[in-house]
Figure: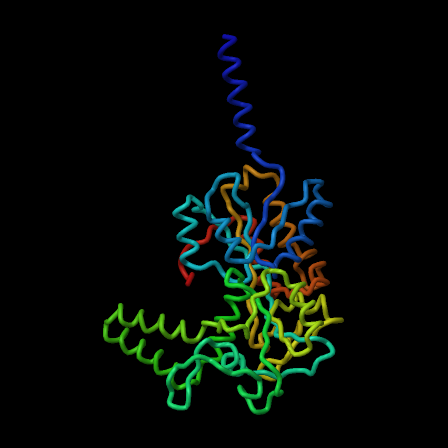
Length: 361
């Protein structure tokens, strides 16, 4: 009888350990979402008395990789992302046992092309940025050749005769992914040589030549999204503060980071116009600024019953007090979604609705 009682006690102790395996939430991912997540973490701790979540800015790609590495308690509970999870990442998650994930779109952000407050303002087009930063560009014969442009004036005669120097995020960053898709690929549209590759891919697909079509699509993507590696574009890591410091020291350089960071440092840097539109709260919210993007948070549902406070943290993030039009995140440069979208998203997040591969790219 005594042995049975001891066995029951041991089982209950083990059950309690499994049910509550960790007291603090661990969050990784986007450097753009980082300031919003840390602010919510502070408010969450104040309101609940729980330990403040540990938030790390690992970059979107690095964060999602850690998040998807397994379902064990030694892996992160939440991944912040400045782009949507990719289909391949979702498949990696599933393969590693992370088969129930809740996706929460938290708001919007714009990618700013900024320079020092003291420097001359720029008004760039997506094509200007592509022709300045693409690894290969078409020559007069329409052939793709290595990009040798040294000054902005070589790219567009109306731009300053200053050296092209751009400080930006590394490949692991969601900001870099979004920049490649929205700016670089957007800027290659209308360039005959690259349009022809895309058109050929479409014809091959219609003809049922799937493999050849995919090869052409990859060729087009590589030509449009690959950034030059000759020192014109400088990878500045995930530390946006470092970019701001370098912009202050070099009036000719431009830097790439999220709008929220631009707003927080408006005494030091200013955003360039893109397509004649300046990056502001209003232009990003209404979509008129051409480099706007959604921001996300991914929750590992298997950890909800193992880590104290995950549901409460998500509830705090999706509360009107935080992400509402007049919420405390607005002071950090956060751009909220419309009210009806917030309401629907908060409901889905509270119910831990699981993400599927449908619609992921």
